[in-house]
Image (cartoon, rainbow, N blue to C red; front, side, top):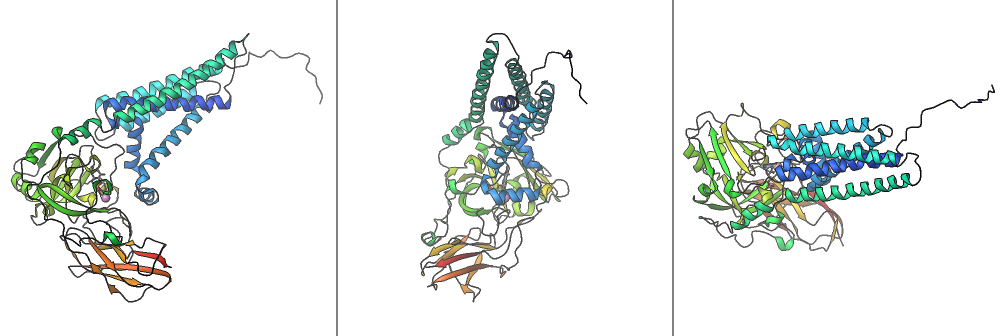
Length: 523
Ligand SMILES: Nc1nc2c(c(=O)[nH]1)N[C@H]1C(S)=C(S)[C@@H](COP(=O)(O)O)O[C@H]1N2
Ligand SMILES: [Mo]
C-alpha cells in the first residue's frame, strides 16, 4: 500500500529525554551524594547511624552461615572490605537504574531513592545500639540524594531543550559543573565521615593509660618456648599480629573512663564495675592462647598474648551466683552477645578474666578496649566478648547468643589440634629443612606430636618447653629428606591421651578437626 501523507499531523513539542549516559550519571551521583552525606552526618552522631555502615552491619547479621563461611574462606580478613565494596557497587547500580528509568520524568528515580532511603532508615534504627537521633543520618542522605537527583535531572533536561542562541550550551556547562561539584562534595563528605568515625578520642584515652602493670606478673617465658628460628610462630604474638575476628564494620569507641560493666540477673547483689574498680583490684598476668572456632584446618586464627586482668571467679563469688544460673550471658557495647557456661567462669582453676591489658599495653581497640572477657579453653565466640558492658547471670534456656542464633554450637571447648607452619605449602627447600609447627589443647596440655612423611611411619617430634596448659606448644622434626616431592602430616596427642583423628570436620558448628598436611619439594 502506498499512501503519501500530505500533511504532517500536529504533535506536541517533543519532551526532551536525557541521554543514556547523562541519565546514568545523574542517578549515580545522587546515590554518591546521599551515601556520603549520610556517612558524614552519621560521623557526628554515631558510627552505626551511617546508612552505609548500618546496611553493611545488617547484611553481616543476616548473612546465612554458609555464605559467611564462604566469604571468610575466600577473602579471609578482607571479607569486610569485600562486603563494603560489593555494597558500593550494588548501590551505584541502583543509582544507574534510577537514572535510566527517569529519562523523561524524574518521578521513577525519586520514588526509588525514597524507597532506598526508607530501607536505610530501617537499617539504622534496627542496629542494636540505635538512638533516636540516628534517624537524622538516613534523613540527610535521603534529602541529599533526592535533591541532587532533582537538580541534575533538571539541568540535564535543560541542556537538551532546543533553545535559542547559546542557551543549550550554557545549560550543558551548568550540568557539567554541577556534576563535578556533586562528585567532589561527595568525596569530601565521605572522607569527613570516615575521619569522624575513626579512633581519635578513644585512642587518646587509651594512650593516657600508659603501660598496664600487673600486680601478679607471669613468670618469664622460658627459653626454648618456640622454634621461631626454624619457622614456627613466635611464642608470644605481637599485638599488631594477633588475629582479629568480629562482626564489626566500625570499632566501638568506648573510653576507659566511660566504661561500665553491669553484672545482674540471677545474682544476690547486682553490681556495676567501673575502670577504677578494676584497676584497684589485683591484676593477674598470664600467657593464654586464643583460638577462633571458624579456623580451618591449618588456618591462622590462633594467637598467644600475655593477658592482664581481674579474675572473674572472684567477682562472681562476690556478686553471689544463684542456683540454676547455668549461663553467663555477656553483651558488648554494640549489642553482640555471647553465652558462657557459668561453671567454667566460677572455676578458680580456669582463671577466666576480665582483661584490660595485652603484652602490658592497654587492649588495642580492635581487641576490645577497654575491657574484654577471656576464658582459656573455650573458642572466642562463646567466651571472648570484646568491649564488654553487660553480664547477665541466666540460663541457656532463657537466652540465645549471637552465633547460637546463626547455627554455631552452644558449648564449644577448643579441640586438640596441630598445624604445620614450615615448610610452607609447595615450598622448595633444602634437604635438611626442619618441619615445624604448633599444637594446642588448651586446659589439657599437649603430651606429644607426631609427624609423618609420605604416609610412612609416624615419628615423634621434638616439643618446645611447655609454658602452661593454656598455651600452644611448638613442634620440630629434623632430618635429611630425599630430593623430590613430599607430603607431610601432623597429629597431636593431649594429656588426656586423646590423639587427633584423620576425620576432617568443617568448622561449623563447634570447630574443625583432622590432620593438617603440606606438600613441599626437596631440591
Ligand atoms: N563484641 C564482640 N566480641 C567478640 C566478637 C564479636 O564479633 N564482637 N567475636 C568473638 C570471636 S568469634 C572471637 S574468635 C574473638 C576474637 O578475639 P580477637 O579479635 O581479639 O582475636 O572475639 C570474640 N569476641
Ligand atoms: Mo571466633
